[in-house]
Length: 470
Image (cartoon, rainbow, N blue to C red; front, top):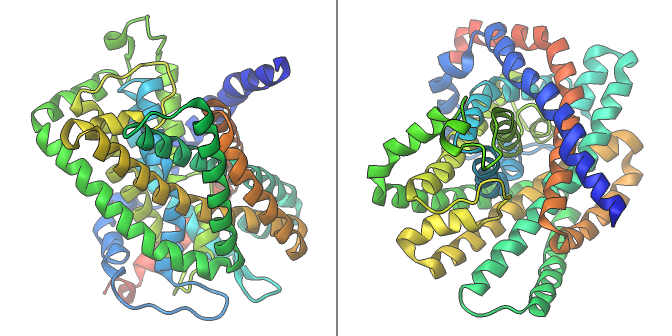
């Protein structure tokens, strides 16, 4: 027990500080600004063009060849891995642990994260290759080793190791743990749940989810793409609709919510004082953590899904990265944050919450029972799709490291971890997810900055061709 506590203390302290404050912060903000300048700020200057050629084409029929998925299936697979508990639980945690000002840093990371994710996808498509089965494979491990040369393969392997481990945290345990938490909260709003019944429910939910994941995993990326293509639009629309309704009811509190966010972004103690223990360092770190957890810009993970797309070229698919970050963080995370703050629900600062904050916020309009049930269903869909997306990422990383024979072993372990995530303590699950999130970003950022010239060249060539702009 003492050893576990020491490990948790190390995860929460020195290792997380190194990964987030001293590595991810400068890379995400300063590196994102550097990529923005090199590419002419296209996430702003070409935003309309990006939306027209991404969300504007979502309802047109698309087909993919052998070993590939359609561009929309690629983006919904990537979105399935990002639109999840990071938007609901993660945003709640950013506010509770970093104060209202953490939302400002979440926004800032997203604005530069658009070009970061765009760059990742451009490189993934540029340096992708066919595997032994004829499927398109790519991602940071491929653009690092192929773009920088064989001498840098160790860095590509390092990314693959960290990403494979992260798939058990961000893409598995934290997701199923949130599903379990929301289901138990929903049941508790209707009837009393004893400690014994709660544990039984956790095991039952874990086994059911494990079976469902196993069935879909067997079908490979095409089945994952087919499932997420249907889930993502459906669940996003309903979540947006209900949060907008809550904000409409509390519309008079919205200006004050913005004041709270901006006034505490740099001086959190001006509002919270010393009693909560919230300082600027925590405000920044939790904003960045939950932005990365939400949209994954800088992690390189989404590029793995986009590498499998049937697309005309790197930039064509890269535009989806701009759309993803905008939709995921600027829209959905903002709606979550504003709903919590504007509704005026009580927030226990310094304590890591699950889904109870957003549930309480929705309950101010829809009542506790409906809110609990709606969040439970939303989290089940959001989180389950995230598990599917990250199962692909982990599979591709293990395939890169050990070849096709290792895939089935990884998938079996991944399915077992689904059950473990449902019955594990909340804090342990999120600490594991946070740590490997930060670590996998380090080799990815090195590859991104070293190959930024390639991205700039592809961007200039694409937008310099008038045929592409029609």
